[in-house]
Amino acid sequence: MTLRIVRLGTRRSPREGTRIGTVRRPPRGVKKERYAADDWYDVWYPELSPSQALVAQALKAETAAQWNAFVREFKKEMKESAASRTLDLLAALSHGADFSLGCYCEDEARCHRSVLRDLLAERGAKLG
Image (cartoon, rainbow, N blue to C red; front, side, top):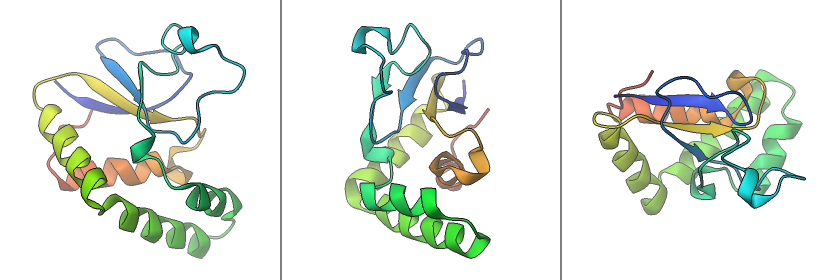
């Protein structure tokens, strides 16, 4: 059983399980009933997405220092009680279920999902 970190909209891998979209907005131009069928996500969970202000900050980040500032602020958001409890829950579930978390960004290194990966690893999640 594992938790995978994925790019939404890409073909699912075998045993990926339920795909959770940790994005602020649903995919543009896609009907709601097509989200799962077109490999976007099965469940939309924006609570693990950066706030709108942080999304804008991340998109403007051109330097390592700017990106690191985004990471620090996003980690602060993820320390809030609901987000922190969700990460604890997902880390625990990763030991008994296959599922995935994702975002649309092409480059995981410049995406909040890389931060989620680190936060989940710190909580002992079984990552694949």
